[in-house]
Image 1 (cartoon, helix red, strand yellow):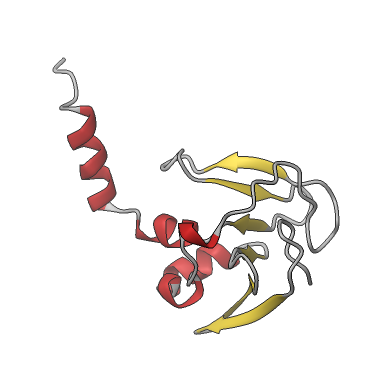
Image 2 (spheres, helix red, strand yellow):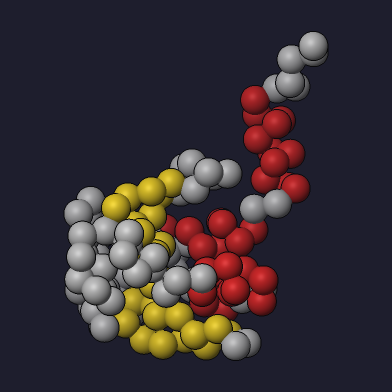
Length: 125
């Protein structure tokens, strides 16, 4: 399989019982359907997502799915809209740029408290 963004080879990475594909070039991660959720539960974000923002995220807005070769759509995470990723509407796979899976997996109470701190207290009703 080749990376949908930089066209480098993808390598298989196994954490617990979950196996995902990571780009050897840009270090982006391809998740087949439901692998992302299973890996979040397994707690393997830091083992799989070894890339960083400085790895140079290729800014490709139109990329094809590495599995079924159809055009993927750009989506954002509901809880963290600053994180955009590519998703295949046919096989339900997702491609996340380096560092994004760690951000998504680390979202929890700390992230919510930080957002609340930055936005200020909710309005009193």
